[in-house]
Image (cartoon, rainbow, N blue to C red; front, side, top):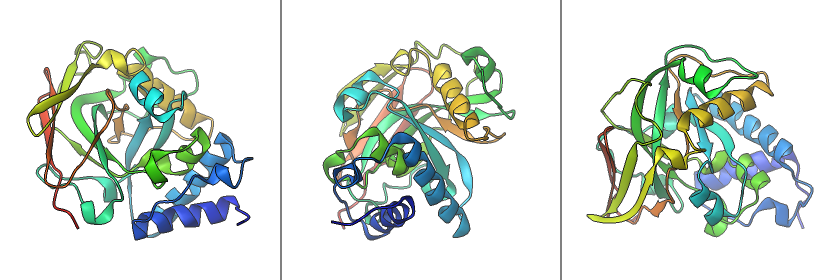
Length: 262
């Protein structure tokens, strides 16, 4: 059995991503791996991404809805990183050639106007730093087989980061975030419905959670960053050949061509 360290786990996770290879969760072989170590591993993988030329574009939250927590068996929201290598342009298909088993979920997204620094930031204070609100779809892609992991495993894996795309409609942060609704359609059939209330009761709470969590590591949320507040509903598989549409009540829609099989 391999003796894992934080450095070797970071190496293995990035190798799995590059090779489109999944694996069993590390806690099967390293039961002592905890969430704090998971965040240190996440920081190391980010450092290596930046060293190879990627740029931070924002942060993402994971498992902020009950639906996602129940499916994944993890009851703690997570914070992770977005880089420019993960950003998709409108109309760009899901990059099946670069992902293992992608799934799509709808997100309410904040684009930051001001620097947001914690600790002790409330949802109201967090929202005051937001420039605009947009629809989004995140393409999650776990490096763990069958998306089976503990909180520590998934934190280390940058909260199942894959890709993301933003909608074209921009709204003011004073909009009804709680009541904003979304339908997720796969090939024209509605498979999930949710509202902003499904994201910690209010997506602004997710933003506050993110910045307060980052503050424990001496970090802040910077102007211009995007913040994906977490899947509003359960995710759907990005099956090659299919189309997933996240249709919001006032934020417009985000359509994703799931691409061709490799």
